[in-house]
Image 1 (cartoon, rainbow, N blue to C red):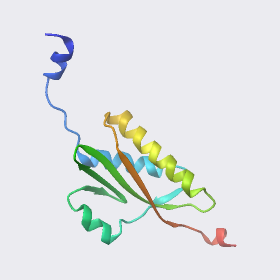
Image 2: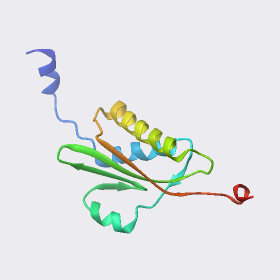
Image 3: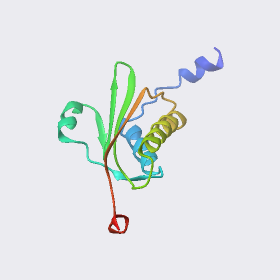
Image 4: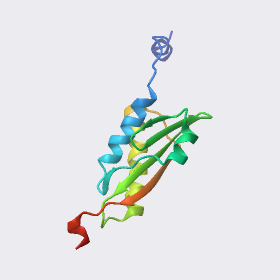
Length: 121
């Protein structure tokens, strides 16, 4: 029996969907320019009833592919497009690095830009 077959026969590994949403959540929050996660809009939430959800992150696993819907509030004075692309790349990399599962789609939804009173002046 070769070594690969021996490793494969040790047992099964299951990763809970919540693990993936947590990785995506904290990866997103660590990105410069992200103020906080946004609530998933109610009209979207009902479409993903059977999907894993966590504070602005929806994970959908269907047809053998993994996709994320990420809802964020951004800081003012950041390039929203560049920050959104950075979120996409960081989530794909984090999931691949931590669990070795390829991510097919990361959709970033910028729901608002959060200004403080100091920013408005």
